[in-house]
Image (cartoon, rainbow, N blue to C red):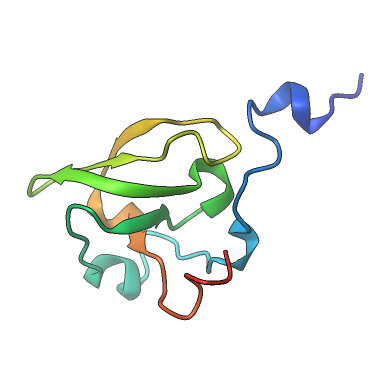
Length: 97
């Protein structure tokens, strides 16, 4: 049995060039030290293509609420994540994606 990406993922071809974002696992120092702020564009560090690019809506000490607007392969609109999973988009990549 074969399945194509259109049946596995709701959004198999994201509108952004997410492959240009660096993958950063949550246990790396860079992920633990990152800070994000409401209104900032961010991505899910361990797998940028899954969630896509999103905007920080709010945050607490332990969680960050991000509005991804369905820009990733999984079609996620809003997700609450731990801060070490959320990274700001690098300045040198903003214009490229």
